[in-house]
Image (cartoon, rainbow, N blue to C red; front, side):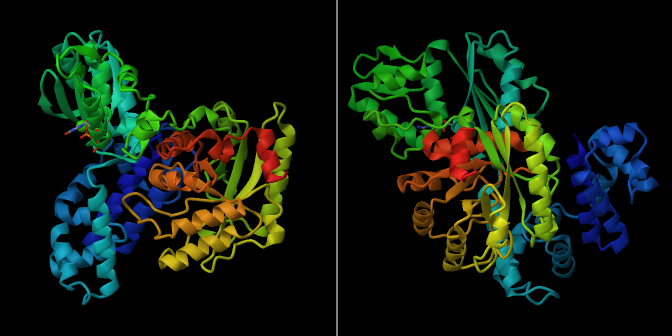
Length: 572
Ligand code: DGT
Ligand code: CA
Ligand code: CA
């Protein structure tokens, strides 16, 4: 579906028109069209084929032409022309969190600032506060925004690298010179952001593999081409490093290039202590240089007296010591998840009907699903009024009666935690739900104490099952709340509240480190997607990956419970 791509281009056009100072109505028409296409239930390509584009309110002849062009060519000549009229650096400012086109326009026009570097300096020098609508706070916020993008710049979200990496591996398998192949690096460890994709191949004929690799359709640029390592840039600007080794070194090379660097250093030192030498070519006798193992990764760990360490654990957070003692966790797997209990339906701001969500859940092999729409005060997300909660309850009961295979839909909510920590529904309404998720969606600016006590107060309500996306971070866009995690864990434990691992790739909240700390305090978790479209239900794998990086086992996670067990836990 190209809808999002088309909408993004229209939003981009609107932003630039705004910077240029075009009239309100013109700019608005692009934004409205973008929003309509973005949230439309139908594929834009189908709409065009059926000749229905002009039937969409607000789309006239000029917009129709531009939209058709975007769908056919993936770009817009008009956007390219507009881009040439504004300095590149000014356009980049639009990517700074919290900085909209109106402010960018003022910065550019009145202060003639054209790069992010200069903008940073101007904020530090206090030069922005005199502009209309700006203040000291604006300067601080802009500096924070710049810091945030600097931290993640050049790194891709896990889902993007995961998709690119898998398609590329499938492509490389078509080369008959490729013997074994695996993803390596941070992508194999499932880190939340990926600097570059590493792929490892074993072959007796590396030149032919490299030739095949650089012919890949999505290669934008060949950065370096050699017989052992070749690096390319894909059209989405992700870098891929391909390494080709001999089959007898595949396992040791996979161990080496999976990393992390800190894990490898510990491994090499351990090898030295045991009279070996470990590198990407194999495990060798330190004195005689005799090759011992290297064909399989498992052999490398075994020879060093270690239990096999899953890639997600290789961060030098105690995994080697645990492997020596054979005390590694038995990590949760994708197949352990029996249902996703944080999904938005079209009863609030989700895209799909409950029936569609049910059928997708069944496709994924789940036994149940929980529909957790927004609560009443969240008007912009079409939060459910008390009346609609009752209607939704009836609807779900009706759907459940139609299931002849034992599948169950739970009626849940993602109830807003208001700024004082009280919940957005009264207890008599909360009682209607099978379970209650709670989350913060407004007034994000809080001190550590305020944020911590707001969540704790929410957890203390007896109806609450889990806290959704507890730190509310958005990778590259919003910092996590500064929370007293010790206190959050203690309250979660004492009230029996689960903490969510939100699987959405730009959230992954709680993160891996919090998972490990929480487990040590005996906290229970729930892995959900929080998705608004069934296509994104597959993101659950990234939540599972985060849980695995946090050393979590099946028993640590609520929604690995089979239907009977979770019904018991909900008391329904
Ligand atoms: P990234 O790409 O920044 O997300 O992180 P990685 O871990 O994929 O790092 P990358 O691509 O630079 O290198 C892949 C792996 O190769 C890395 O995890 C460990 C190994 N490696 C690379 N350079 C060194 C090194 O200087 N020493 C050791 N011990 N290992 C290295
Ligand atoms: Ca990498
Ligand atoms: Ca690399």
